[in-house]
Length: 547
Image 1 (cartoon, rainbow, N blue to C red):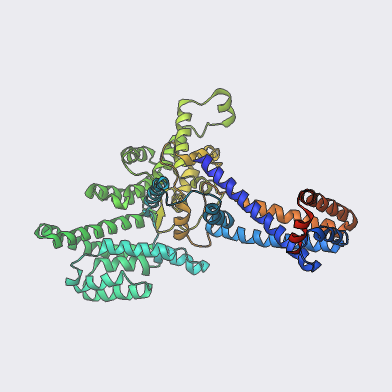
Image 2 (cartoon, rainbow, N blue to C red):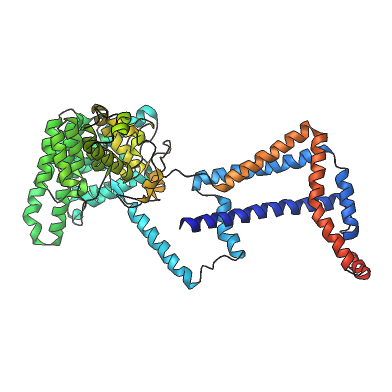
């Protein structure tokens, strides 16, 4: 695969190079014909061209090289813009897709290529599945945190795509088919579809005038409350209403599919409320209370893993420095059969690093070798970095943090931001852990091939750009190298600009070089014409020149 890719790139490079050279040569000959204004008679043309070249002034060479430099510079600017926007070279794309078939490329309709097309389709489907977007288990409150950031900075921390995904989640978790039978729930069903925040808040107040609606309290706590204290009060009211709905639907869940769907909705609402109440307690400094609420919630609803409550629990336990409890949670959820996350992998690495980081020294380790504990720590960090190579930049404060989005892409920059936003303080608390991680700041390229996990997906950059705000510079892995054509055009532009400058500064010397170069360039043509004149009869040659 690598050899084939190299050959394709080499072929496209040759196509572009020859196309460029022949284009320049063609226009140069047209220029000569236009200036000379003589018929293209082969006998007279060579002598005329030679005489014309001998009479050229240095200004002509300055204009010629300057124009070539300008054209190359414009191509360079366009190539750079196209690469920054689409991540590929425009010239390479055109060369491969349009010029290669004209030069004997493989036909896409052949049977041998159908298998390749099917393989590409399978890989594209795999990349789409790899780029599944997940709900951020530690997402912030819109009213109390995201909106306050907007008021202070004037920037929107959430993208439209991220908020649209949240709206879909709310409709999935908080609505069911029987909502039209209850006026308050019917209003909230429409409220979750509203794009305007004020319209959603007004609808929630309208629903509360009819009934103590749990989902209405949730919306107000998420979007209208400007502090965590206000949000906690509203969630407590939502808990009271949600528990009543849950008990009633629990008794009727076996009476039909509609009642079962309503009970499933009420269960989702209750779990969401209790988790957010635990997060409020954690944000307000009541960490032990938050840990107890999360443990009780996981025991009461062990099958609802979609909320990833164990990640909230891990962060709270790290705040309490209850490392034994953290290890117990990891023993349950860091299993090969369960999906991984940056929280799981980097928390496991932190615990391994904690055992050796205070005494670890790269110089001493290089002399005596790594001990078993140090080897385990290095392997754990290597595993974490392979899973998400963006995290070290934020933990080592080599890249500035922003507010995490409401949805994350596993192994992507969005997940790295969400993890580092809450866990950076825990790494700083463990002495020497960041120094140990510092050795992995330069991510080796083999990690993208996949040793412990699947190969690193290529679709993360596109998905992260949709999830993260425009003012954030998205971290890209593996780092894209500049295409050959940008380097080639940059070199050509610099070379012709240098020729123009030298011709302007040293006209006589550059004139001698130019004449010598053009004489050498026309020497093969003169040789061929002499041979042709000696072989062909004079009468035939006279008729050809007349034509």
